[in-house]
Length: 554
Image (cartoon, rainbow, N blue to C red):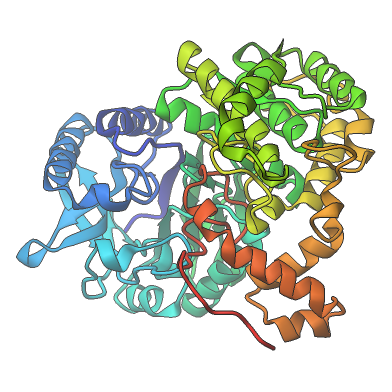
């Protein structure tokens, strides 16, 4: 009977579809584990394919290739510790499973299939995978390891079944994406499993960005009674080792190891936006980005995020002024670009706008100027920015915050043009506070300057689209604290109109915001993806019909 078991946790960042690259990362982690004298090295859920694969996993050739790579990985890692890695598996009748494989001695020696398939928020696993019966633990070097996969540990059933069938340690591989303050939720669920089973538990999460999601790591080990023995950093790739010892009662406990305190929600949100853009560019092949720099707070924050993610040499900011652009905006845009150290281009749109106006004049004769002429400015800017993107291979970033995305205060095919939106899930009031946070804080994972990079006037002046004389956002929308309060209730909390009124908001404001929210669905359907910060981000978290006559008459 073994009295010592050494486990290596590989909190790493896979890339969806890069089967060989992910296998190479697994081999490197295995080699490090072998050098550390480990019995087992564990990688996260679906690590071999990357996560989430969405419908890519339904393509037979993709699964066939993944299984071939898995078999080769087993042969490559024959002489050393067991390797546990997430990947697909085919079960009875060819059913597809989200599984966790044990590779040892050159072979796939055991496979555990996920039982609880999440089908909410960003997850569609019921559509993609089949569940199997609950399974027992796997014996590795004389120790019985239970391996509930991600969602299987959020409910007591699977862990209790594994404990009842002889599990001595629980290892939980995860692909758990970030949302604000999620760590406490994870920790509370895992403490529940430890208390119920009396077993130590290893929670292993992946890191890295995938489309709108960021997997934030923060892996940890809990001893019986829920006492933490190890806690890894959030967002960073880390390989860490933990040793379990059997006590006189025959129970296993982990020796205390690395313990990293996690930053507050403001830093984690900002890190999520940086990592999401960094990985989106890396995994899609873009090395450089550009954006329209208006002199406003949103574009200033996006420029800062881009600089922290990619480095100043890979960011281009373009000021595209019209006759409505204020002198303050011209000064502020250039000051922010200079503080960041990025390339700054000045491209006036007056000549192009005049040409478009003249072209349309025969058709617009007899009409009065309105929002149409305002949108021409925005769409001309989008055209010019996309031309620069095409010419120089720089991905265009769009800069609409969640408040604007929610109510459609953005021009489709204009300022909504772009490939990625780092602040898509950040309400305007949080944009202001995030700018202040970044001006006061710098971390080693930021590639931008440590000094104040967003001039104070950008943060404090009244927001304006500057598409007509003396325009302010408050001309078209409730003040942002009111707007964001209503949106938080309607979008994030699924509250009713009556709930909002009971919370103190004017019914006229609530109904206006609700109307704008529903009629803007078609814009969101065509909008760029962006970093997910909350449980109700626009895209996979909140899926509404474009054509709908429902309105809450409460």
